[in-house]
Length: 470
Image (cartoon, rainbow, N blue to C red; front, side, top):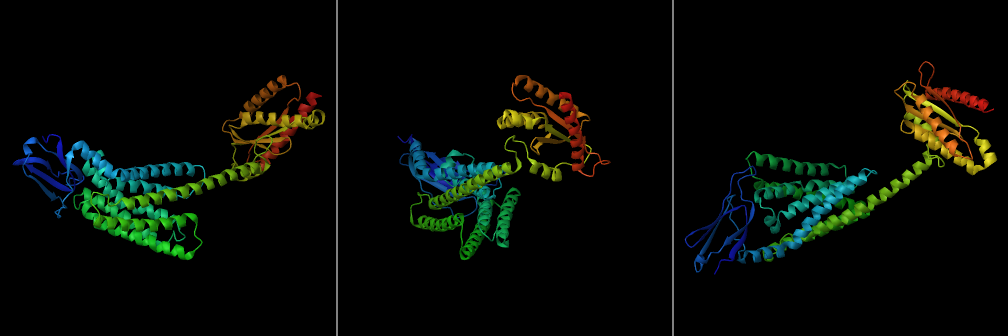
C-alpha cells in the first residue's frame, strides 16, 4: 500500500510534469503575473497512489529561462517524514537568518532611541539595514522558507531585490568606520548598486528583462563592492592606529572571505543536501553581532558622556538652591533668545526682609524663604516664559505675552500664593516686590533698558511695601 508515500523534490524556476501509470500525476506550470512568468522556488510533493505500484514514474523538468535544468535530489517517504527531514537539514541556517532580521530590527530601534537623546553617527542604522537585508535574502534561499510562505514567485523576487540592495548599507557602514569615508570610490560603488536595483525593478515591471536574467549584473556590482571594501581596508591598515571597531571589521572581512571559500568547496565536493551557503551566512551573522556589540558599546559611552554634559550644563546654567535659571543663563538668553518687540514682557522681583530673616531666624530659614518664594514664582510664570534668579534675593521672568495687561493676572496669582503660605507659616513670612515693563522701541534701545525700567518699578513697589509695613 503506497497511500502514505510520496516523492518530494525542490525545483527552482522550472516547470514540472510527473507521469505515472500512463497518466499525468502532478504538474507545475508557470503563469503570467506582475512579477514575471516563473514558478519561483517550489517544494513538489507527488502522492504515490496504490495503482502506481510496479509502474515507472517519469519526471520532466523544463527551465522557464531555457537553461539546462539540474537533476534534483528526490526523496521518498511519507509527507510528514519529508517535512521533518527538510526542517532538520536546514533548521540551523533558518534560525541564523531569523536572528539576523531580529537583530537588525533591534539595531534600528536602538539607534532611533539613542539618536533622540544624543548625537550618534548613522553607522548602526546602516548595520541594522544590512542585517535585515542579509537575513531576508538568506532566509528566502532556505528550503524551509519555501514551505512557510506559499507565494513562491513573490518570494523569489524578494530574494533578488534584497541581493541587489545588500551592498548599499554595507558600503555605507564600512565607509563610516574608515578615514577615507568621503573618497569618491565609495560613492561610485553605492551608486552602481542603487542603479542596478532600480534598473532591475523597472525592467521586470515593464516585462523587458526578468530579474533572474539580471543576476550577472548583480554579481558584477557585488564584486565591485567587495573590491572597493578590500581597497579601502588595505589603505586603512597602512594608515595604522586602528580603532577597535575597525579592527573587528577587518577581522570579520577576513572571516567572510574564508567562509565563502569554504562554501564554494562544499558546493563542489559535498552532498547537495547540505546547505552550500551555511558557512557564509554564519560568518556574516558573526560579523553583524560583533560590530553591533561594538556599536552599542560606543553609543553607550556617548550617552554617558551626554548625561555628564547635561549635568555640567545644568550646573552652569541653573541656580543650585532654587533650581531656577541663573544669571549666566539670563544674560545669554537676553542676547540670543528673547526678541526685541512689544510682546516681550520682563518682570523683576525682589524678596523683602531676606537679610532680616537670616539675621533673626538663621540661614536655614533664609534658604527656606528663597526656595519657597522661587517655587511660587516658578508656579506662576514657568508656563509663560523662563524664570531666573539673577542675584541674592532678586528674580526675573521673561516671556512673549500677546495679551495686554496680562501681568495683573500673574501678580494676583502670586499674591494669592503668598497669602496662603503666610497663613500656614508660623516662622518666616514671604513678601515679594515686583515691577514690570514691556519693550518699547521709543524708550528702549535694547532689552536691558526694558529690564532697567522694570527694576525701577520694582524698587518703587518695594519701598511702598516697606512704608505700608511701618
